[in-house]
Image (cartoon, rainbow, N blue to C red; front, side, top):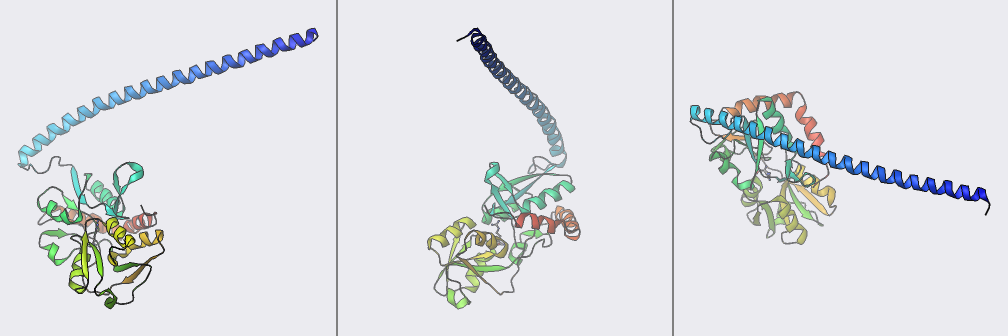
Length: 301
Ligand code: ARG
């Protein structure tokens, strides 16, 4: 080894040392920055919490005042409308598991737009489909939006807006398609509790056994495991399940009964007319069609 190689080696070592040093420094910088960011977040959180507490106090004071003046104790906050729904109905209303337990969908998007235009915030209350109109009558929710069809029976206890979306009822089977009502004789027919499909099964398919369940995915599950032979479901919802499972077959029910979705309000609630006006605007200017396009092309959850 000559003296040049000693020098070279020494230079190398110095270089290695400085690289190490740089690494350490950058680690430290990253660490410091992370801690600072974390501290910053903490500060922001603290500030936000203080602000929220302030807002809450002001809102509560305002609510107290308005409650006193109207004597209405059912509504906690006049600027919030509570929508009752049954979030088992992709793509109308369903729980977006990617976002925790957010309820989203075509109906929710419409409700958000209409309530915003009317100057309200929207709160959503999820419950079983069969409990919705009871909750509405009891004042636990301000309106119901759940792909609900306005039937004469329901109109006795609720006022509906115009229909904002049309649909058809289908019989769905797995593997083997049916071609006539007759083939359902003696068969188990799954339907949602409290739905028009349940009424249809009981009135039209008297020779079949209606199996009523609470949630649509449960009914699909029963079909998959063969515990029921068929089910009745609306076309827009059926399509989504058929996208996922090619063995599902459908047969269209020809009927005169009411179909489609409308929004339900408590009998005599003037808000129904305001909501209806906004809804009409959205139907006329094509916004509802745009939302339908957006939500109906989403992949089923
Ligand atoms: N349109 C039918 C009815 O009114 C079914 C609606 C079911 N909706 C739901 N969110 N599961 O009975």
